[in-house]
Image 1 (spheres, chains in turn green, orange):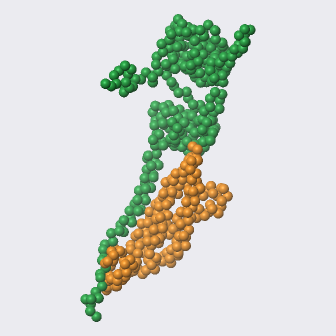
Image 2 (cartoon, chains in turn brown, orange; image 1 turned 45 degrees about the vertical axis):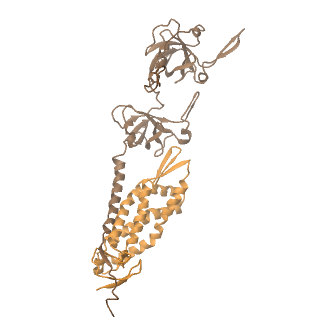
Length: 308
Length: 203
């Protein structure tokens, strides 16, 4: 047998270069766990506690904290406080929403509300209630007191006080009208300290503030004014459709008006308008609202050249 | 002493010299690996098992699904799912899910860790063989969790009504399934009854 002819090929023998690679798997697993933990403890947003008088509609692990319509946190737990007076709601904030946890933030619960003249929170009928927030600007804190109702957004304006004998159909957020245009709203209602008047706080928006003068006359414009006259027949008037259900205040300013009303000015709220007031037709130059007076420099002004 | 072997891939008959430890044999023609034992079986199995053991924790601690339904939002871990099945009176399904997704991966990981770590000791030889038999027995049941997951996802996939996101748990869980599978694949059961001299050479 000739060895040279039947020589078999030799298999190659190499170093095992692959096995070390398998040890990267446990290392990668540990790295993944570390990343999870890092996300949970280091990058996690703070957990805040909000105390509510009434947490109706909230569910632990289910309800959300929403701001501007998006979810920024989750309700972790609901607990009655030791004295049984309030409910402490623990909310875990998203990392991106940590800025919300500042003193001065106001939290409230959005529930479906069906009031005369106002329907709100309709989506919560199916989705369940959620907490929402109006961020504050104070120092960081993790404990808050929730409020029962949505706070009224502070629009710049002149706050005035009206004294009425009877509340009639007025309520919070009823409108204040000038010639049927809403120029402000009721921000608060309470009895005065001797219970002799109803004190109605109202705010007139900044752009309409010059309309209110020291000698302006206010009257209750809520409901329907029915007037039966021998020759005129039945006259029914209402300030606007919304005042029919939610009430409202109207006012007029005399032609030779006095100085502009300032914050805290007090007026009487008449039950019925004097026909004379409705004929007052003063010239009142209005200042423009800050948003409207902002000029956009990129927009061509009237009369300026925009091309050749 | 030369050995004559045939390549498993291309069938070429060739001579193989003595193979030193930590080396691999490649076919002279097709360059595929030639082996009559799985290469570095113990090391590879141990690596896979350790990775699976590490990921077993996130797979059970983190939610497998996050469902958002009309603004309500729920996160479910495997254990919560089993508990709610049990509360619904679905005892059979509940225990099935418990066995396939919690119990068998845990048993498999522990068993493989025991075998690979104690392989050098002559003492537990019988126990190791016994554990290996159990692992082979529960292996097909381990696969069931993949199907269970597929069923779960199709059940909660409701399109517009609800959005279902896979959570961190489900990725870790899938990784555990794949890693335990690979761990048993790379394990060469002949290691269980090798003599100490053979073991030195092949592990």
